[in-house]
Image (cartoon, rainbow, N blue to C red; front, side, top):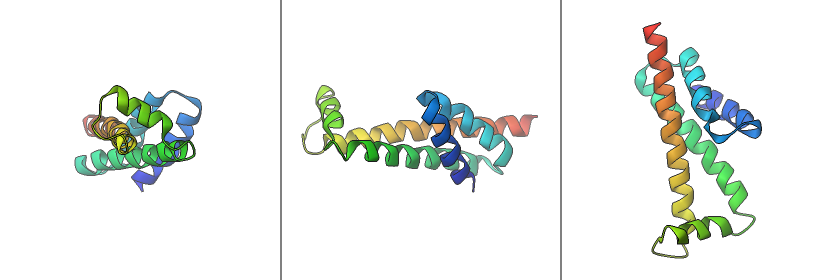
Length: 113
């Protein structure tokens, strides 16, 4: 349930606000709805990772991964055909880590208050 709350609320918030809004959204969601450290971290991680993966793929597939391939070339990734996959995975991973750590912080605030 917490994963779904995070996905929906982050999607709505990111439609109007900058990318880092995922941190306060995950923090608040975990403050109210998490029941353990493990659940808080993995719900935040999975929620943002899935959201960003779907969002990036929906933007990247129609233009044949043009931007992702260019960014992969800037970072000098080895194979030109897989640059976009690595870039999409790394971007989603970064979002997932931010979401997981923010959710863990929200759970910690809940236990300390």
